[in-house]
Length: 495
Image 1 (cartoon, one colour):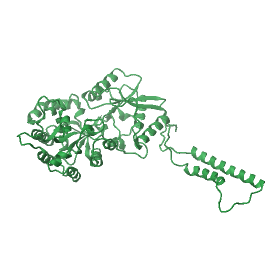
Image 2 (image 1 turned 90 degrees about the horizontal axis):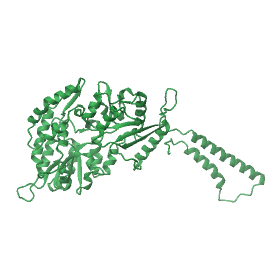
Image 3 (image 1 turned 30 degrees about the horizontal axis):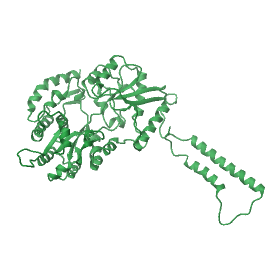
């Protein structure tokens, strides 16, 4: 195993090499007289002693190598020993065998993880066991059945089953584990523990930089044909003038009947409507559910939220009524790939390797969702996958699992705060300005927020509201139809 060590031994090794070179190199200006036999023996002995001394010094220096990492010790001053514990971080996407490191960061990460496992005597791996759909119920079933001998960290997702699990004691209270410092930067930069916290307890965690989420893809060719400089979107994003009104203006400029047959054949917008609806709500300073010192509160009828819903309906009505009859829900993907739509509101991952935009033929740009009239800045609604420890584990077992997970998710030395999402984007379809400007912005604290509607048992905003926010929808009717139900759900969640 390659161990990360401080660079201390170079001088000692060099000294040994120089001592040996003394016997191998001589002046070339003149040939010295042959020494007497006794002198030769003496010089040879002295040279050997010098070389041996330098070699011993180098060996001593090597023994004094200092790890680049601080060894964590118990109350006796010994490194923590997890007793050979094997831990599995289960998710729905990781391969059985991890890929070989693809860059310097991944090499350093692999070395760090190997060092940590050897130093603290444990093994850990991340592998797909559940699938996306079954994960919440798989967790509930595992804990209610009492678990088994495998030491799991469950990677979960927002789901009513998980919020019910929080309330039912099925998720271990991580705030009781002193090996986890939720005031540290690795947790503070994403705030997920606040999202999954209640009454002082913390039930889930996420380490590091938040994954970029919803933004606006644009087809540069379509914009150019409409007389729009594609770079101007990045310029507006940079100077703070990328707004709802500007987005509306550009979509209107791009939507055209190019063959004069009375029907538009280039469209302003295509999307999964639910994705844009929630992005619009938060971009205007709104939300569906808020949280304060008194708990969760109903926020659907706040002025900011209602304004966003009305604006969204207006945009859908103007620019998103062109799906053929009977089209599948994800027809928008095919439509955008066909190259006759200017804008698509979608999550960032769509442009990363292996996802559907890998097949796009035109050059695309990508900016954050524009800010609304009440929005203070561009906002990304983070939706990181929470990691939880089953509540059926005892305290010692949970502590050891958390200790190992915390090490596993730390950045290696010299890479603290590394944003791997930028590297992922660079391997995808994103242009340089998206990688240099938009992607980093999406993970910054002042451009990110967490949502609490996923923390309310029985509240499922898709079928209960946002799937009904489409072209020509009447917002007041949709809100009136769900308001009392949501208020009751929130009251129940606060009990």
